[in-house]
Length: 197
Image (cartoon, rainbow, N blue to C red):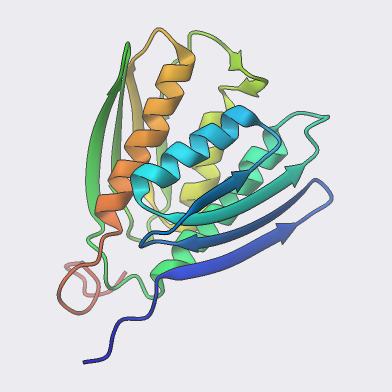
């Protein structure tokens, strides 16, 4: 019996605003992430850890303007890598959900990794920023990621008095949901009543 191909991808993107290089292994490995923002690096590390990914990411951008371009383009590159690593989208479980508490914060992620890009994002951040990271960029990251990954993702911050806790719970919930949805599935063909994704 032939072993399935490794679920890996290498994606890079270079524009006048950002330069991003990413190696992704869906089934694990070491995590090495470097961005202009310590907070964003922290969030990406949480996402990757709970998703169970091996990842090497280096993102540079025009942080002297703000972090918007870097955060959004990182989402685009990660989304492209996730779609590429799944290949024909035929061998994973597809659906999942996760609920993550973090002290005062509670976040929910419901995910369909089924080539239907859509983001519903509902979270109110009490503090506007932490460590130079504007919390409004959280939605921009996930919007870019879902568009390129082909995910339907409903992200809800159910409650939270501390924006750091709420953002981290959202990233962790997405990671846990991704670990379940992207896990290999027995059987052949896409997990769909249509027989195709």
